[in-house]
Image 1: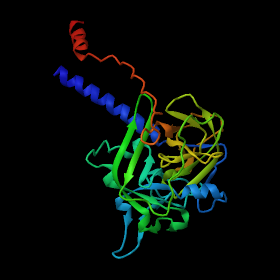
Image 2: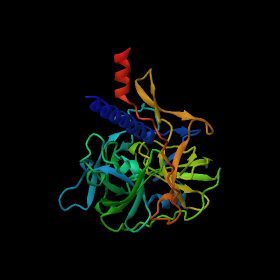
Image 3: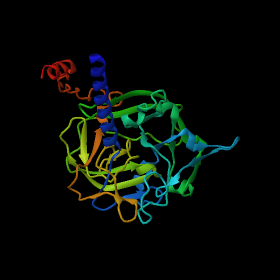
Image 4: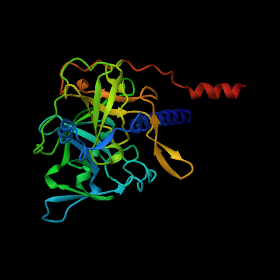
Length: 329
């Protein structure tokens, strides 16, 4: 009986740790001004070009096509009508949201995303992300036909063939996945990425992805705030849940520096209206957003992956001793 209780305690602790990782991974925020711009409306030509090689992860059930059609329909909800439920006057409130995570092309058939985006569901471990989701390029506001529907070419929708490598560490906070798609991606070039060294503190960066599952958004005006960890850096990027897996670019070099993975909370409730508003911070305040360095992926940059630090030793709780103490008191 004591052993059973002891195993239950360990299981509850593991569950709490897992939930804390998931919550942290999904939270993002606006720093200073809201710099999010739809890729379809951006006047920054180089950012728009980079955005063509970014993709969104969408559930199979939200993708459909009529027999013989060369187009795929994406079904979703407006941001104000989704589970997020933003206020009517919030930015992109009436824009379709359908995505789960973001990703970007680094090889003919290779895509990078966050590790937690490719982790099996805790509640249903038999459902694997490679089976439940597909990767869609070209999901932009220009592809939207309404606030709840968009249409993309069938050739721009790809299945996940395999997860080549993946890390999701509670110790180093390393968080990435390298995914092989079911075929070579057409009409889109793999992005350039850093092959050595690391970005400088204060360097200007831009993130391209799918905040809150929205169509492709570009958010610039950010900088590296902290550069201490070998596995990730911290920045004041305007990102949200859904941006996980987004490419973070060095504005000056055009190279991908890393993968957006964690951050501050993204929305807060408006008690007067019963809806949610974007959580806002000053550029140099709040926790910042964490970006996994692209150089930690060994298949992309051999020899650059840091050694995983040793996990701290946590004393094991002895229910047997506790029970004995209670009996003798």
